[in-house]
Length: 149
Image 1 (cartoon, rainbow, N blue to C red):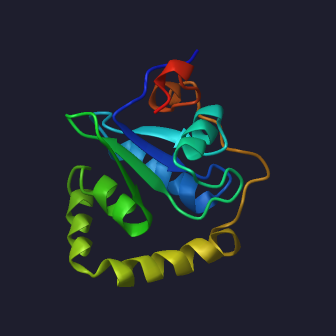
Image 2: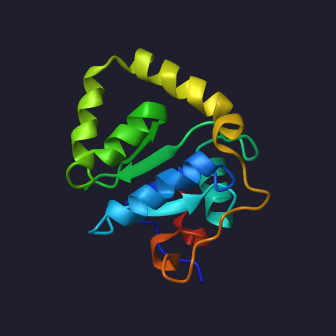
C-alpha cells in the first residue's frame, strides 16, 4: 500500500553488499526511526530517481533526501549524504560526522574510488535484498502518486 513521503529518505542499491551493510547499520543504530530506507530498485526508488532526473539503472551513490520544516527538499549524495546520516545517529557513530572538515573534493574522490569498485570489493547479490517483516515499516517501497514533486 502506498504511503506518504517520509521527511528523511536514504536511497541505496539493494544488490550491493556494501550498501546493504550501510542499510543494516542505519536500521540497527537509528533508535528513533528518523530515517526511512528506500531501495533504488523498488517502485518508490524508481519514482524518486525519475523525479530527481537520475538514471534509473545505474546506481553509483547513496542519496539522502531531507525535507526541512518549510517543506523544501535537499538532496545529498556521496560522502555528504553518508556523513549527514551518520551525524544523526547516536554515539559513537555521530562522531564520524567530524569528517566533514575534510574538503568535500577529497571525501568524494575516496567515495568514488570505493563506489566504482564496491561490487568487486564487497560482492553483489543476484537479487535485490528485500526488507524482513520486522523491517518493512522502516522501508519505503511505494509512494502515493499524488505525492510527486
